[in-house]
Image 1 (cartoon, rainbow, N blue to C red):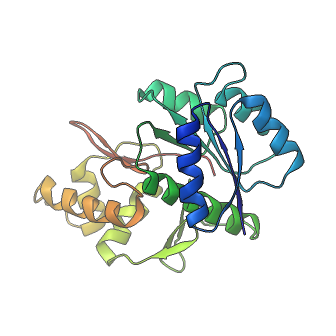
Image 2 (image 1 turned 90 degrees about the vertical axis):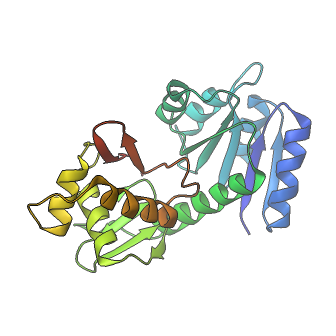
Image 3 (image 1 turned 135 degrees about the vertical axis):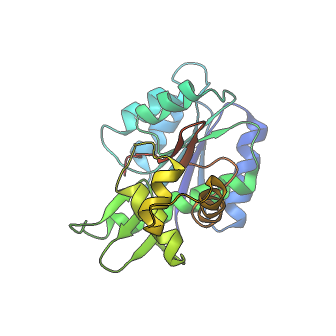
Length: 231
């Protein structure tokens, strides 16, 4: 049984998250400020932390920074702010994921499951040479297999080719034409829609919320890129 720390100064949100976590069999520890959270983290075994950013006193970012000095458990930040700069700041402090309020509790629960699965499985296995990784994605070029947070994903040959090409070029924006020529191995470029449809199908298989993708991003007017996400 895994334990999740939930820290939020809003009692209603705190209790709501606890209900959903307990329904799924998780033990919970609750805190209403950063100092309480750090005290729990010091005394109890916790497998994942959900931290609100905007709290009086010690906020979620400060807790994350202190936690990272001694632990690599998954951290999911909650915030009413949705700007990319705030998300980048949170991830820069060592958080693993970011959820904007108001949120769907079931989506938050899915993210908790994903992070704990990834944490426990990656912690128990040694990294193998030759594997391509970003966040919870792991591509094995030898076995031609892709896993998301340790779970295998069934891809068509074309979908696999697109994912492999993007992961081989982490952080780089690739045009639809370049992706097409690399994957289809044809010099002639048919249409951007062909690549777009396959990207959409891949997102449905690897993203928790395909409408707000974490891994494959669109760079409008240029193409697509696979985000470089810390393990």
